[in-house]
Structure formats: C-alpha cells, structure tokens
Picture 1 (cartoon, rainbow, N blue to C red):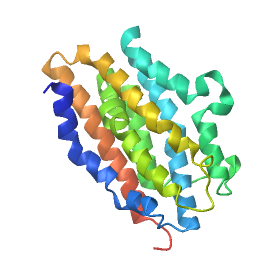
Picture 2 (cartoon, one colour; picture 1 turned 135 degrees about the vertical axis):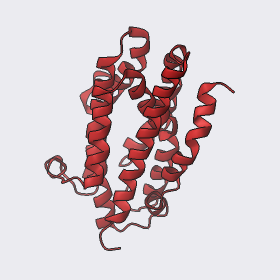
Picture 3 (cartoon, rainbow, N blue to C red; picture 1 turned 30 degrees about the vertical axis):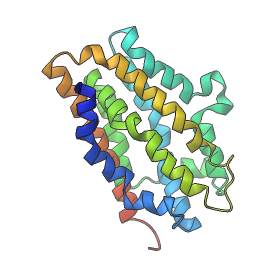
Length: 227
C-alpha cells in the first residue's frame, strides 16, 4: 500500500462524516420541503462561487507547470472550457433558477457562520498555505470523494417531481469529472510525496478540508428552518 492508498484509508472516517451526514441523508431521502431545499441551495451557492477561487489561489503558488496542470485543467473546466454558458457557476445558477432563485437573489445570500468559516479558511489555506497543503485539501480532501457525495445529492434531487434531469445537471456533470480530477492530481502529487515533511503537508491539507466541510454540513443541519 503506497502513501496515497494509506492516506485514503486514514481519511475515510472523516469522509464518512460527510457521506453519511444527516443533512445529506435528508437530501437523499427527499425529506426537505421546498423552503428547506432552497435554504440548502442558497448556502451551497456560497461554496460554489468560492471553488474556482480555491483553484486559482492554489495554482498561483505551485512552482512548476507539471504539478500545476491538473489545477489549471480543473479551473478551465469550471469555466466551461471557454464557453461561459457552460461555466459551472452558470449551471448552478440554472439549478437555483429551477427553484425560483435568481442570480440577484443568490448575490444577496447571507452565509451561515459555518459556511463563511468553511469557505474563508479554505481560501486562506489555498492562498497562504504551502502548495502541497492546498493540493492535499483540493485532492484527497475534496475531489477524492466529490463524485460519491454528488451522487447522493443527485439521486435525492431527482426524487423531487418539480425538478428535471436538466435542472440537476450541475450535480450530474461533476460525478464523472471529479474522479478524473482526482486521479490527475494524485499523479502530479506523487513525485512530491518523497519525504516525511511533504507527506505531512499533503495529509494536513486533506484533513483540514474534510474538517471544514463537516463543519459546513453541521451548520446546515443545526440551522435547518422549520425542523
């Protein structure tokens, strides 16, 4: 078992706190009413808008082109590969619009304290941390399980009769993409995992990202309206 296989096994306990989180269970069971679903969409929109900034901040600190390439490719895909109408933010806005939420409405969303802490700490980690820590956060700490997480959300959303497959396309498109993102990121990281210090940085970033995402979902559960 190599370092990354060991890391994935070590991270599984934290990842399961996300995958098996009560709030994700509520989405998967179509338990949320429309008001509560809108609450989720509003808060996730904050994270969604931050995500390309995480990538850009991390890319700026990577010292060589080969290591930077998976982040650049991910960022390019996030922006619709040059087609702005296929930007993932636009796809998310279309999803939100299916629930009656305009872009202007999303612009005015007040993040929960936990949403703000999650996003601001991640952007600071990517901007100010060591590049290996940021890649640990974005790779093993995010992309490794995003397809698993988004599959749960997609399946749950498709149970709502007022949402079509096209409405939930934002979630569907990530399920295959993020698996590729992760494998490419690990290939770029592997040459750096050659000493204890670098391994520690990668592991530290991954654990921080997972802890912050758990906090995000905890905040959604704890502040769920009308429960």
